[in-house]
Length: 270
Image (cartoon, rainbow, N blue to C red; front, side, top):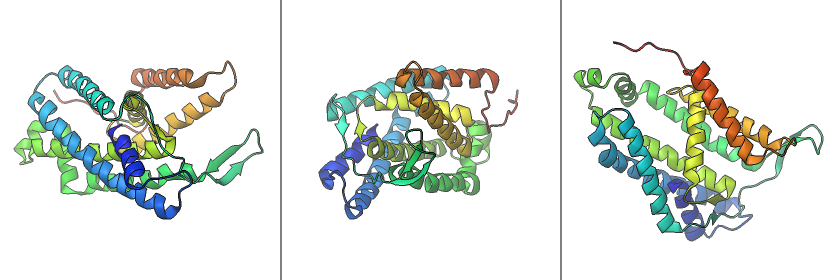
């Protein structure tokens, strides 16, 4: 939500982005919005970790969860003061011409250029994240800390610094996601992050918590499910039914396959 508002501010204030803007204006606006939103959200998330989470490192697991809810309300109210309660409208600037069409209309599937935009951002980000987590010293420290903080500390890993880096990285990714949301859906408001966060959590659980390709697979499946449910004509299910279906999937995954589609079931040490 903060990343999307930052992107909207950059696009509207710095570049005066208009509907149908040329690529010469659109591409720099997106790149600058990405850089500013990712940097700003990374610093914000690192600050939240230092103030709200680090003092609770040894607290019961329920305490950080309650803290997360409290922080989310703080961010919502900050955004409410910053931009007000009205949605921020973005101009329809992404190209929306057809790339290809499957079947014949009206029952056809049309893939447009604006739907390519999230893929162009997501794929390089995912590749870079997988490389960081799997093949770098920082990534090995992240995995070791996630598995056992005490053992990682005994092996010389600075646990606090590693966790702070994870929050920094997660904030940057959230900022990039906010830019994608703002440019693609052309609207952003102070409470946008609540529903999107729950859907993102569902996608992560569906793909397998801790599995990066699994999270992307889960997100794609959730997106396809949403599109099909909203496209059904029976009883006009609409967005309300879409949310019901998504969270029904979350409950079924937690009950029948809690490790997710690509996750591995690992025993916990006693």
